[in-house]
Image (cartoon, rainbow, N blue to C red; front, side, top):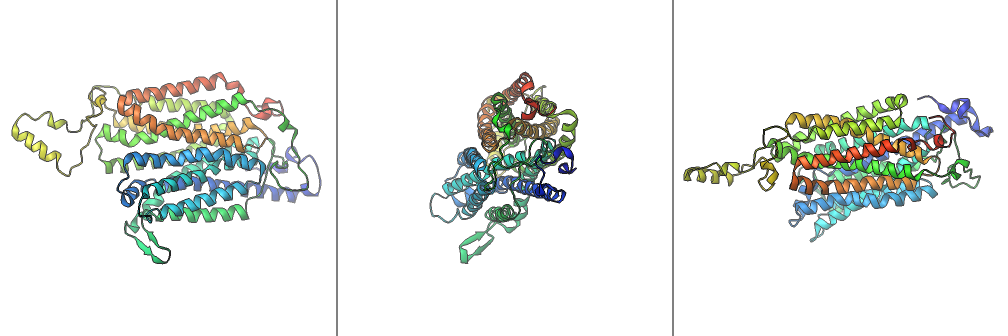
Length: 508
């Protein structure tokens, strides 16, 4: 990356000893060291969500017999709901105080919550509620992503912004990939594991991942305290005094901050981001039940095959982030966002059922037995240890809705794996550019909250529409939402521009 601060264009307006070449070089290095700390924080936020997600259900069953699948849904949703509440709070805090304060506080909450999760088996009753509370606190600590995004937006110029946001999203995607991988590596400890009597801890395949996440939190706090410094630059890359900087020397608030932000563009960006996150939440939630219904996969096969597919999508997303960094310089942010939405539409359109092939119905063989002996044989089979596969007969749409082919499913995964990361990066990038030089903590908090709300409502949408009406209705409604997002983006295309472009300081 070129060192922008060396050019005449990006030299601070006030020339003094502090603006010498050596000082600029030190500022540049310190700024990017701080940004990389934020990358690591974003990575750990993703790891904290996924590192226990695959073992959450068996852990609940092990420590509390009264836990059921419905309660599991509440436990998973608790993370997103708490993050939705915490994001604006931490964002507001970062607007008026140094970023390290809300970061250290949030990481400490996250760290403590993971330790709480590891000890959730200790109480004699209501263990499932302790798991619920621990995951809620982990989600609350993850509200610091609003601070991370706000800091990176304020510490990068317009030219650096897309690349930095793409790097940050790549770190987030890497966290989603490595979280389950770390859980898989730790599964060799087994359910029994070892007991550390001194601290009354059972170290097993369920508690070890949470404790590893807590250890990562300690490293993160040290990096924030020792490496992170407050940096703020304008759209051209020139250093300006951060508004939340606690120094008695001077507070230089740019005249640009006196001009207003386009609130219509802000609201539009939040709506678009909500739709993007909602669609992806639906996609990741529906993958397992859809594949089991359409391809008659067993639970083990569904977890294995979809795990491989999600892992491949994660690596595909990282490649997309790298391509986006280059493509945005040539085509711009808005065209890439529009293209990403179009690709997502194609991904869900491909999933619409068609043809004359219908899914296998669970227990359908019972209806086809005519003799008594055949009925007895079917009964014995149904009562055996073999797991029933296919589309449950309780879902009436299974009887008249054509099956989705495996080729459709794989094609959809590939398309969504391209469209979603492109939309994700462009949403953050455009939003930060629209907000301009003002502290973005609260606004980034609302954006994060809208994403958390989407991840909460997405599974609810799936559980009702898909279960009752089937994939044809579910995916048709998703296609309709994407078309609505494309129309909204197209109609307000001219307003989704950078703050400095809007006021004529920078050419678009």
